[in-house]
Amino acid sequence: MMTLALSDLAICGIEELPEHSRRGFTHVLTLIDPDWPEITAFETFDAHERKILRCHDVIDPIPGTTPPDRELVQDVVAFGESLAARVQDGDKVRLLVHCHMGVSRSSAAMLSFLAQTHRDEPVSSLYDRLRTIRPKAWPNSVMVGYIDEHLRFDGALVEGLRTHYGHRLRAHPRTGEWMAANGRAREVEMALLPD
Image 1 (cartoon, rainbow, N blue to C red):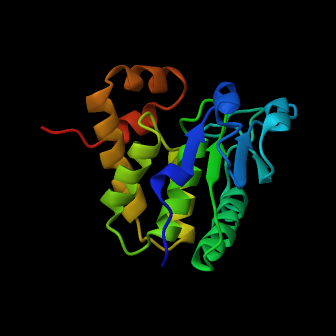
Image 2 (spheres, one colour):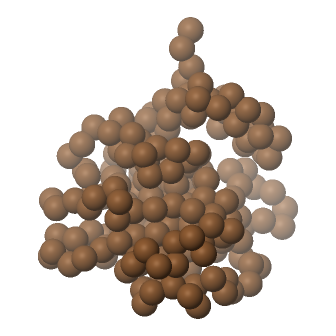
């Protein structure tokens, strides 16, 4: 399968969107909270196709939130399939995926796209690519679980996520404190750290 250069892929948060407005992205995937208003930064972007998906960035049910679910992940995967087909056909594709901070929902969605377009590579290479695109990526584990299931990775993406979390915690130990303080302690505990 034809692949994309990493320079054609980006992850960011809402505040960073203006920095990407003239980078020629052909496609944008937006993952934001259900009640978030329309984002005006896209008024200055080059012409592009945009898909908006809404959920909260949580991993456990919390009253008043909409967690990511199988249906949302099916939409992420379908978006990726459409882009992968265009890449295979030789069309120019430049993809920006964003959420609120460009850390969790967006990195899970980008992982899905990487898994679709680099299916024959080891899972560790997918996570290496993800870290190259967004060094502070901390993919939402619930989304990764559904992606793994949908793309039939038989648990390999989830296992790779444990290693990725460990890599991130070694590089930036305070990330674990921040994640735990924001309801993500279960992910911190997933991390594979050296003995």
